[in-house]
Each structure stands twice: as C-alpha cells, then as structure tokens.
Length: 259
Image (cartoon, rainbow, N blue to C red; front, top):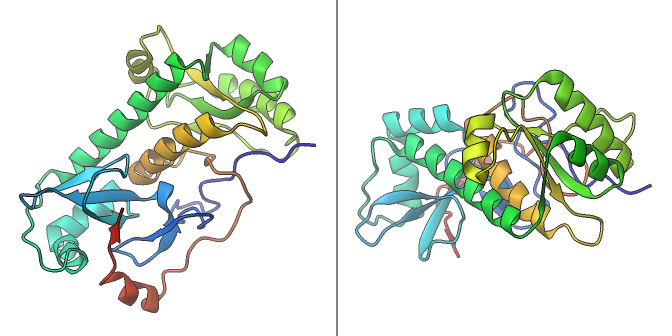
C-alpha cells in the first residue's frame, strides 16, 4: 500500500493551525509561528521602499514572511503592527505600505496559482474531466486532487473516493482540496469550458508537478482562510501545528529572510 502523498492543512475546526514545518522553515513576523515556507506569504521591498506581495517567493533582495489570513493582515495593517514588524525585519529601511495590501496579496496569490495551473496544463501534467480523473485516480496516477469552490458535494465525494482507492487511503476520509476559486475562474485560467475538478498527475517516483501546484494552493488557501479546503499538499503526516510561544514572537521581531 502506497503512502498517501498529502496531509491535512489543518486538523482544527477554526483553521488557525499552520502546516507543521517539514522542510525549509520560515517564521511569521506577526505571530512568531514557524512553518514550512509554502504555507507563508513573502513580502518583498522594492528599491523605492514599496512593500509588495511576492507569491512565488522569488523576488530579489530582502523579504519578510507572514502566515496570517487576509482579515488578520488587514487588522495588522490598520493598527500599525505590520509596519512595526516590517520596520524591524527590514532594519529601519524606508517603507511604503499600500492601503490595499491585503487585496493585492490575494489577487497576486490567485494570479500565481492560475499561472502555475496553465503551465502544468501545457506540460501535460493536469487531468481534466470527471470521468478521466476518476479513472486516473483509481489507477494511482493522480498525486493532487482539486475541486472548484462551487463543485457539487456529490461530484467531490465520488472523485475523493476514487482518489483514496488509488493512493491506498481507503477508510481515512481523506479528500481533495476545495479551492477558493469557482469553476468560472478555473475555466478562464485554463482556457477550457466548465473546469470543475482537476487532478495533478504524479506517482511515488515523481511528485514535482504536484509539489509546484501544491505550494501555490497552500499559500492561497492559508491566506484566504477558506475552511472547506480539506487537504494540504506536502507528503507526510498529520502533525501538530506550531505553538505561538512568547519566545517565538520575540525571536520574530528581528528576523527576516534573504533569499
């Protein structure tokens, strides 16, 4: 039996838990929580001091990481906590924070995911159509299963079951990820009609496409705080979340990541 290639994004009903660190770890400058970098959003500083979201986490120069959702970011922006945390992270450099930074961040994460899906489709790594997804899933050739936000419960249930069979996770209740995007948005992103479900092809020997898509999905789901996102993207196990400890918050005050 093959080890299921996914773990849950959060076991908590309130969605406050970040995925446990499993590889490269970064620390949120607002909460002090350490988490895998794919769960966090990087903020980069432009040469003129403008702070911008960096959804691919590849912009040159200095960056700071946040692991909060959109309402929490909006609150931190409004009460000055974000500016103070960024001032510490960027060592007093002149900063300009856009008033619509939370909106910019979500839009950037959506664009990044849609662009990634388009690239994977052109590379032949996406499987579309419920019947084809079900066949590939049962054969164990779907590494990551995604559903549109407005997909029917019955449609999700049938594909989830086929996927569990293929990954050897029968009886676990493991499900695909419900995206914070509806079928219209997915259809536009992929240039196809009525994209409701999609699978990312992969197997035990090659999870690269699933990892790339999964990182983009994980960041968007974490930021939007969509409670119906039922699965995360990394291999491994359900692990306890990071504790929000006072010593972690203190350490976060002076931490930034230079990539």
